[in-house]
Amino acid sequence: MQNAAEKLGLRTACTVVCLLAALPPIARAQKPTGVGTQSVTAATPAPQPIPAPASTTKATLTDFAWLEGRWRGDWGPRVAELAWFAPKAGLMTGLFRLVEGDKTLVLELFTLVEKPGGIDFIFRHFTPDLVPWEKSGATVLNLASLDPKKADFENAVNGLPKHAILIRVDADTYTARSEIIPGTGDPQVIEITYHRQKPAPEKPSAGNGARR
Image (cartoon, rainbow, N blue to C red; front, side, top):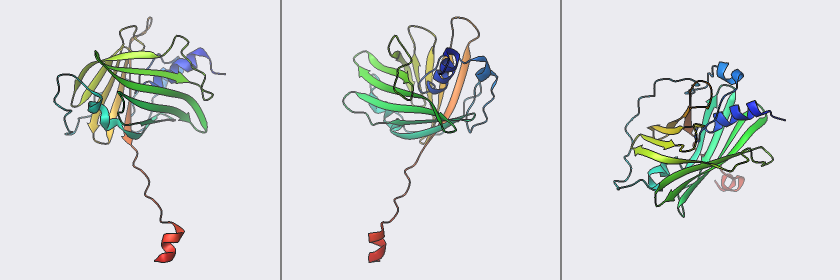
């Protein structure tokens, strides 16, 4: 059974799209070598030109439609995978899983919800048996700022995390950055770079081959 420190570390890793809590000492000491992945503050990759969001007086889910699809990022020996559904009926829904070897460490369900006051980012973590980690309910962050290259969600309740930032590098790459301000200890910054996973080409069926 996972102890509390390990759960906090895994929550930190996955919430980086989402949005993290606090790393245990062993995770702080780790220096991930995954492509585009960093566990400490580092320079943000230079963004490439990307389409600007619709010119409106306030943000809408249309500004986040580019997230639709499957994504993958590496965090040391761990693989982070997530999938986003397209905006529909006032929300975007996503699913995240963190895997190390043949073991699923944590699952996460999250939504972007469009409300009269703005866009909320809501998420909750689960074991592989779908037992929720958070006993007090889901975590909610509010969209604080948005421009064509970056979306910043802020936690008004605590610093776990205080900010969750999506930095769009190009059409098929983005960096999820989490800024954590724990009640005790030093602030932390964690980044994971995600790459869009293209659908595998369909293989011709035996029937089609036989007719050629």
